Image (cartoon, rainbow, N blue to C red; front, side, top):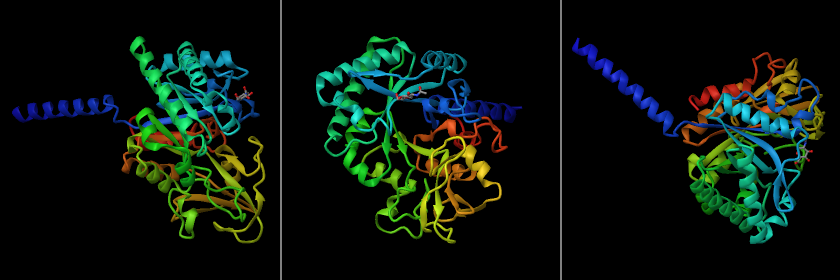
Length: 391
Ligand SMILES: *[C@@H]1O[C@H](CO)[C@@H](O)[C@H](O)[C@H]1NC(C)=O
């Protein structure tokens, strides 16, 4: 009887501990980007905010907004639907955070000028951001400045600092939760040195979304095959190419002063492809150019996971033991990509380092319908979610 009671109490205690862990913010983040241009893809790639599962991720980031006349704006042809969707997702899952990302590759650095150049225009921008986020029910801002150079890095730091201060002020006046502030940042060692004042940023950012992919692609000179997002250094990597992997990039950010729990590690749902120049098919094999464009994403050297699944039929798949990711070859086509197994390996890695969580670029390139890969809807994001455990 007594024993029974004790074990009952112990059971309760364990339950309380689990609850505290869940509420104490120690759970991992699953940060998912979705892109506004994926709504322009043809079926079955067409992805609208309605395709977003409200329980898939802990944080969703809509990309990208831009800047006009020192104010934040969204140029999306389905703007109204977007705002409605955001609100309905949050009604279904009140714990879901939805952020707006500003910038992106096309926007580049030039898009942030002249806004960042003076304190007056920055203030105008910061005010417009708060008004915009609050009125459309967003939970925060992600700054994806790709990438500030050495001359611009102090302006980047200032912008982040002024946003953080303003978000804090807004919070003290508001009945709502504080707006979150994050940044999409480079994983290249040289870029990290040039672009970021890491210790200052660490104070102001809630977390960083590490763009730990695009390490290799058909822009390479000399043009040889290489993996988009290797977890670890390859045995052939020497000199600067030993930096081109997720493990190095994560370690370097932490080494420069970003707390590990603020590092959210990027995992891609796409691969980079090459056209082989010879019968050689290994990593480092000569290539003659980018791989053929996929039928849906229509851009050479690039395949979404739902296209890769189709490519894999009849392809030869090799798992790189050193870099812990797969590549596939069919005819003269070569693609380095991530699959369920490499996602699981990457999540084990980030949990061992106590990182903040995983970021997915992007959910619209996973097999979100489940029709292309026969692994159910969102096989890659679901694998990450499963491996992370509780969100
Ligand atoms: C997506 O956003 C970009 C940048 O703001 C804009 O130029 C483009 O027209 C948008 N695309 C759609 C489909 O709304």
